[in-house]
Length: 203
Image (cartoon, rainbow, N blue to C red; front, side):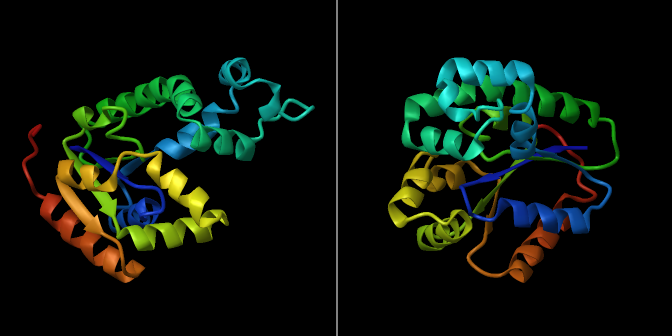
C-alpha cells in the first residue's frame, strides 16, 4: 500500500485532518514527525548536540531542555533553525522511511505527517502528497490563538517556512481548511474513497 505524505503550513490544520483520517481508516499506520522530534529531544545524544550548538541557555540547571526558549531562538534566527534541523531531520527521515518501507507489503495505508516535508526533500519517498492549506488571514489568526503570540511573532513563524503557495503548487492533493471540522472530514472522505481500491504505482 502507498506511503502518503501530509504537510502544509503552521496552523493550517494538518493535525485535525490526520484526526479525520484516523477516524476513517482506524487500521492505517500514522507517523508524526513533530512527535518524533519531541521524543528525540529527550535522547542524551541529541541533547548533547543541542547543548553544543545552543549552549546552556536552553537548559535548566537540572539539565532539562527548555523547549519554549529553543523554539523562540530557532524561529528568530534562520541559521539556528538550520542547525537544529541538521540535528533532527536526518534522524526523523530515517525513522519514517524505515516505517514506510516496512508497510509496503501491508494491506493498510501508511501516512506520514511531516510539516517540513518539501523543505527536507521527503516528498521523493511518498507515493502521493496532501497539502492542508488555508488563507493567510485564517492561518495568522489560528497561530496567534494557538501560541498566544503577537501578530509580528506569528508572521515571523509563518515566514520561516516555505511559502504555502509553493507547497500547493507541488501537491498531488490540496485540502482547503478555511472552514470547520465537518468540511475537513468531507474532504478526507472524498480522498479516502479515491484512494481505496486503486492500484498503486509510484508517480
